[in-house]
Length: 295
Image (tube, rainbow, N blue to C red):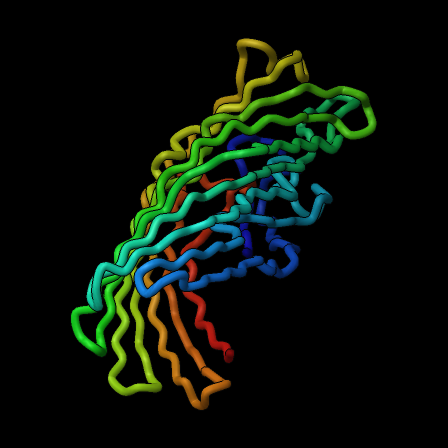
């Protein structure tokens, strides 16, 4: 991500002007694997391990090169889940599946303290939070009207979170326990269509709606007085006002042999973050990548 002509709403020349910078993040490799086994002609079971939501982005932590470091120079957020599932096939046309999603989430932010005139100005502030256990469920229906067409509809429920952790000023001993309970994992509805014109070629389209509007505010509660600003009864409250999103995906698979499949796909994923609440803690933009692989 690239930022051009960065400035904020004050007159301090060290954080205003025509400063340009970009993120220094590493590529992310998202783990996912699954297993399925048929028990009878009608029943099947499975399990999957994956990361449904995630973010990890870094920027230069030197404010002279990146004045945005006072806002954030590293942030991360993820949910890792294990989903045991069961499916039942009613007949050749209809099947249904249900999964219990058992998850663990973590989040963290690092930034420089903006306090001109203070001995702590420019100090590194780190926060780390974790939700040790959360849960949700998935339910899906598959309809097979003809030999060449398959349709699926999936609902993934919301997962309530209760993040707890610590914030500290590095190297000073100043710290506080914190809680974050206003950023939950959203519900989703997904529809997919698969068309197989010939035996070895299939084409698929997917549409995913995500209820990101549940992230309306980010409220952090402090157990101790922190920097003389936040403390018991004085939470840090940041408006977010995220929007619901639609994601569109399409792909083609060619099973060239019994052992090799070639795939190419494209997706368009809207950003939930409106311009008025965009910052370097939760940065995002519309995504339009082309993907290809073989298996």
